[in-house]
Image 1 (cartoon, helix red, strand yellow):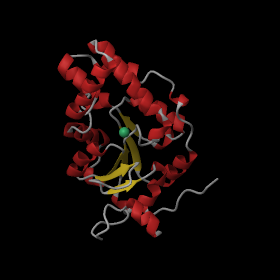
Image 2 (cartoon, rainbow, N blue to C red):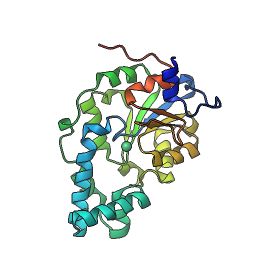
Image 3 (cartoon, rainbow, N blue to C red):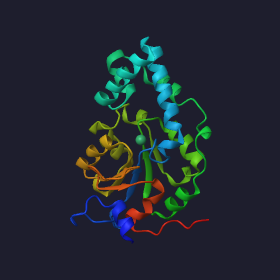
Length: 237
Ligand SMILES: [Mg+2]
């Protein structure tokens, strides 16, 4: 491992944290979906975000400017816009979830053989835990060419529409996967979603970041996940 790689994955530089994880210490790798298994600049999340705003405008009769303020408050207060719409307006979740994901993800994503190669050599179980739907997760993973590596896709509907970062969502997710938290590695781009996972005992990775913040580890790109386990990078084809 070079110094550069050590710098990328370690939580801090005071020598108290291991630079990598022993592969045998982890049974399951739990991945967030949006902006984690693909990159923020791919544009897919921007499309979802636009659709969320349009839905809030339509459902609450607001201008885009008003809707954005409401939406940001819901996100901070409840974890998702959907939970705010459900709690404060009694809206049903299904029409919202259908609308915000009703587009061809292939417009934004392409197969990612580099990611597929590294997932193929990691022996751990793999699952997705997303505030979106399992159907959306399936579309994304299928388009990226990595669906076969995942044993389960857990969408917000499977945890009673309770979103990350609410603790109950993580507890339900772990129960569905039947894995103890301390044997789990959780990978996520949204820093606010990491502390509950750490509190439960999961090892945490902040993705797309240049510092670890409150996570145990950080990576700039998901394709570098092998570095957490001190694996060589995937061969360049
Ligand atoms: Mg995300």
